[in-house]
Length: 156
Image (cartoon, rainbow, N blue to C red; front, side, top):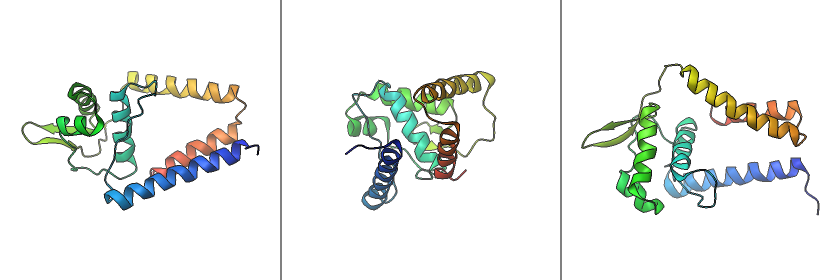
């Protein structure tokens, strides 16, 4: 059976929905970070990405405590230094706040606009991804629809 792009996209969308539902049922809506050891993306960046996604989707709210560096490192079977690096970057980006002796918490939503260099880096990655999709034959309307889906999925 030949799968079209639309069928593949539908299957992926349903799969993501099922994963989110399992998270809600099994963990009461709590975030469960999963590491893909075969990914080209470094583990600390996977942690950052998943925490940011969970904040955007409302799984993690301002004031929610994150697991300690050691506890998350044990859960993910990674070194504490990897988790500490992720937490440090999240704090630098003002996604979390760390209270010495208490732990790390999701920060209140910041109203600060990203710096020019952050915007440039973000748009450079976006541009590269768009160029790759255009090369693969994805239409402008499909890309716009996908961006709209992303904003809809995080309630923006």
